[in-house]
Length: 310
Ligand code: FAD
Image 1 (cartoon, helix red, strand yellow):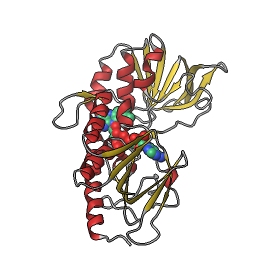
Image 2 (tube, protein in one colour):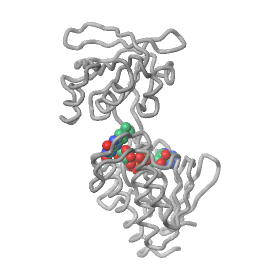
Image 3 (cartoon, helix red, strand yellow):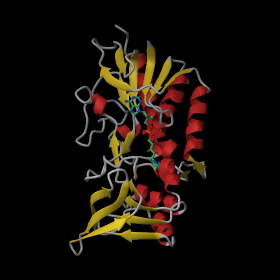
Image 4 (cartoon, protein in one colour):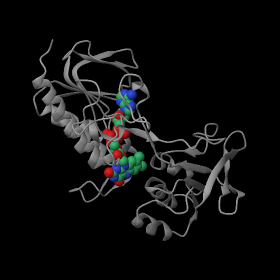
């Protein structure tokens, strides 16, 4: 068994692995996709001390840093169930989708989050047939075409700026009265000639010809009129959902589905810690997730030295 088993290999999981391994304890990381959301990120300019980098480069650096230590990396492994220890200090088990079971004296969950669906007709039907969630993955597919981005937060505006450099035209739809992105992003967006912004716009349908997407319908909430725009792609950028479905009924979750942790990253189960975007810790950012992963690993180590095995 492991001393510390980390589930999730994003910034939080990678930081937890480095911190745990540096204590000389048996450390494993099981991750569906090592690197996590960072793989889908373009420019990163807010990881303090790194002036500027790119997501895939950052993800590769995370993995290299973990590989510099004696850590078992189990990539492309999806956890499907957590089984808590039967007695105090006992082994926690993680059941994998492939049927395997990993045992550990302590577990750190850092399974992150994923994009929220807009839940209108056409979204599922035209998924990957015009409906996309990852501009950095799918942007080039829409080269020279017309797209819309749903959502005027940082993700939506980042996506619109990114796509504007590839596609012919970007329409950005924001439900509220104004964009919610950082001022610097809004300024950049406004400087682009091929972007149109509609605020007070509620998306009602993603239309198509049965095979692929051909447009978006939205209600202009200020005039209460319905409008339709012909286009080839829609990027949904309206927030993140924590990856905790597999933990329902075992760990205490918030009403948003986030794992409830205390200041040390401790969950409601002894020996089980959590870190990063999957938790109630506010502000989902790389630097916060990494700090959080480090904290959870130190808490797990503290737990191990204080808790005798049964
Ligand atoms: P994640 O990165 O989500 O990693 C989760 C890990 O868990 C992955 O390895 C995943 O495969 C794995 N996993 C999930 N479910 C399971 C399971 N059941 N079993 C096993 N493994 C599982 N932040 C910034 O600070 N600066 C930025 O510029 C920035 N830009 C961003 C741009 C985009 C497009 C996106 C999507 C995010 C951006 N972020 C940015 C946010 C940042 O990427 C996240 O805050 C950060 O990645 C969170 O790290 P994490 O380790 O908590 O989770």
